[in-house]
Amino acid sequence: MPPKLRGKWALGITPRNFTWIIKDCLAICERPGGYGDNHRRVRRQEEIIWLRENHFDLVVSIIAAPHNLHAYEELNMPYHHRPLSGADDTDAFLKVFYKELQGMLGRNQKLIIHSEEVGDRLLGIIGGYIRWSGMIDDPSQAIIITENIGGRQLDTWARELILGVHNLR
Image 1 (spheres, rainbow, N blue to C red):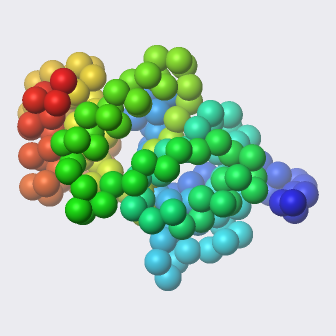
Image 2: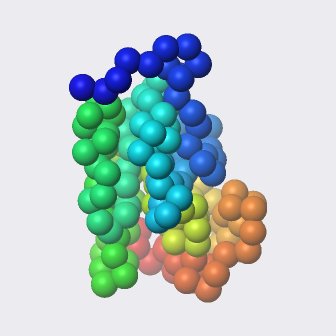
């Protein structure tokens, strides 16, 4: 049973690198609690509480390993684990992932997607979705917007994903 929190802690804390992709519908963030040596169990709980208290319907983890998924269950936060490892066929993964994401957003679910960090991998996948979904069809514009979301230039992998994602429709 999770501890009862009072005062400002009852509302949790915003996950690191929290960014709206579609305001009040789709957001991204770093893995709740952080990753690697920076991971903190208490921070993970506080960030999951924040997601729950801010009425997110679902957390989608694309981390390859199932680390800390139990924390969502313990805090009554629905989640999907959609692992993407380096060994996976990215195109096959994205065909299924984008259709699932579109379906959830079509049902007006408020979603947050996380990887270990908000890096080129997560940004490329999000930029790809922006283009795949038809929100922005021009590949150059999709890259520019994704770079603005991430606050930096994307690496080659992310750019190539965005450039070629129209083939997955």
